[in-house]
Amino acid sequence: MRVLIFGATGMVGQGVLRECLLASDVDAVVTIGRNATGQQNSKLREIVQPDLFQYESLESDLSGFDACFFCLGVSSVGMKEADYTRITFTLTLAAAQALVRLNPQMVFIYVSGVGTDSSERGRLMWARVKGRTENSLLRLPFKSAYMFRPGVIEPVHGIRSKTRLYQFLYSIGGPLFSLLRWALPNQVLSTEDIGRAMLNAVRHGFPRQVLEPRDIRTLA
Image (cartoon, rainbow, N blue to C red):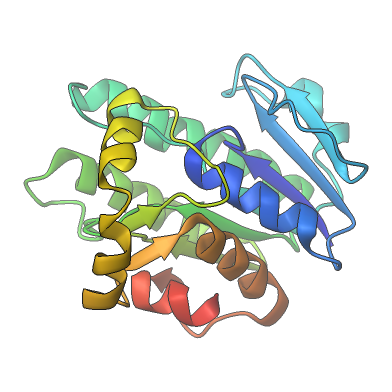
């Protein structure tokens, strides 16, 4: 399969990229983002695109894909709703609308989060915006689309978060992950789990389009 990854320099995206490069049935991986990952692999091609709202000049590079793993996102901490909406909703839909036109048989997987508000009317700003994004993606005519809602994510295989605060917390709280996995086996997912689950969603499908942590673990 041919796979496109958005946000491959982020923590989740790094894990997804690793699993794609290791998978024997993935023939080609193209990453798209504002920065290159810096990785070297015969399967990998990187597209550095400063403006992730515009894709007209990239149409020939974005055709012929079986799957898109959309791992791009930002924390809502300290952000106004309009700014968070522009990055979370508007940017995501700009990419998805271009891709569905170029790849109608594509499987599109979006990394959302536990607590996302599908009603779009709740009191939490980030959850409303994520819910609006999910709902809009599910209405697009992809072959299939899945919304992944991970909760606690454990970075493995040397993967690090780009957010300094998060990386600090991961560094000091690393030993706690074993305890959390024991206490909450269906709530803690590793970056490896998420990458494997995405690939299996493309290979085998899944009966639900919105996947909570337990579903992601099952797919992994």
